[in-house]
Length: 169
Image 1 (cartoon, rainbow, N blue to C red):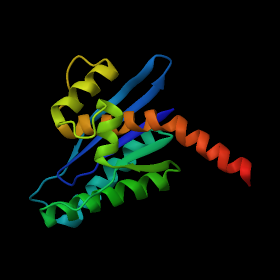
Image 2 (cartoon, helix red, strand yellow; image 1 turned 90 degrees about the vertical axis):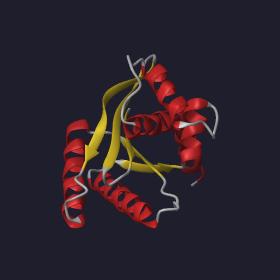
Image 3 (spheres, one colour; image 1 turned 30 degrees about the horizontal axis):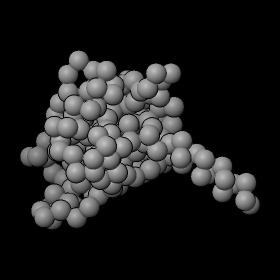
Image 4 (cartoon, rainbow, N blue to C red; image 1 turned 180 degrees about the vertical axis):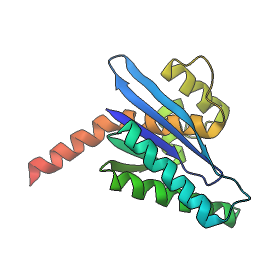
């Protein structure tokens, strides 16, 4: 199973393609998509959409895990994150991928065992779980990898629940 984790953002959109392997998980790609803050908003959205579309074609994930957007103190930031999240989910659906959302607390609990873990702890756990030589930078990339790992942790339960629901019909 290939999972594409997306930490949505307009200036920096983190992504990580993680594969379920025989012994845990393996990173296939980790990085960020950047757009220029000086470019007009529509141009930035198109650039992000194009980059995500290309990533989806190249990676061919089974599932795209996106961080669920919560209201933030800065409304402008919340809007940009919401726009980036919407583009990511729409492009994933268009590509035929299942789309799931996880809250930051769910991700932290699944990856670090503590729903209040800080960014540093998440980065180190991502490094450890994926056997990387260093913590992925910037933090958006590590957060995207954590989203993918969160889904891999939750996937068996989701699959059993879906099978049980299907058997009841």
